[in-house]
Structure formats: structure tokens, C-alpha cells
Image 1 (cartoon, rainbow, N blue to C red):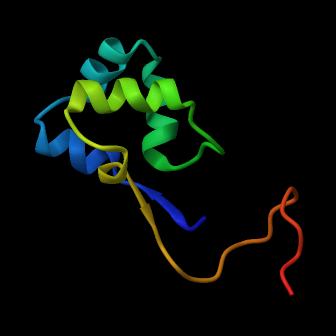
Image 2 (cartoon, rainbow, N blue to C red; image 1 turned 30 degrees about the horizontal axis):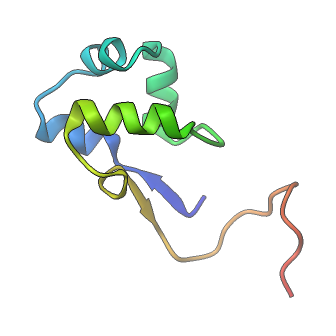
Length: 80
């Protein structure tokens, strides 16, 4: 996937544990772990906003676009 999640980097910069962030945001540690690993297909804007508020950062500091070949997706039309 061309979107890389850099949440673990921001957690390290803020010297915060995943458990603390999950509690502050109101999500489970399991869901936060899935988000950190990039194994989710989407994230709600209100969840992203809550994470940014707690970590005092911008969404662009948590997500990074990597240009390159990507795997086909069932819900995207083929590219010509």
C-alpha cells in the first residue's frame, strides 16, 4: 500500500506508550496496533483528529505517501 503509517515514530518522539495513547483516544490497544502496522483499510477522521490532539501533531506527521507500484485492489478500477 502506498500509504505508510508513522505513528510509532511520533509515539517515540513524544515518549508515549501505545497503551497511554489508546486510553487517551478511547480506542483499544488492538485497534491502535493494527493502525500502527498499517493493516487497516481506513481510519475515521474523528479518530485521527483525537490522535493528533493527544500527540500535538498534524495528520501529515502520521501518514506518508510512498510512490511506487502497488498491489491491485478489488474496489479500484484498473489503470490504463
